[in-house]
Length: 85
Image (cartoon, rainbow, N blue to C red; front, side, top):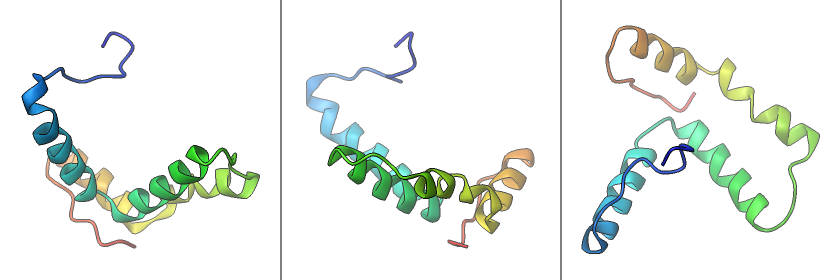
């Protein structure tokens, strides 16, 4: 936990419940970023490194409406309303 790889430890019987809750929280977050991360993770799991273009694309989220909405919501201490744009 000290390295930041884990946020919590749960009993064996609660692993599925917590894993699904985490997955639901991630799925409800910024759809564009989720889509990019899912694609990049699948490619890396398959042993294919990201190309230079894909690495640049990883920063494209900073130019999206969702990024602006997320930053504004954070500053206002509110939950963001992502649009997928």
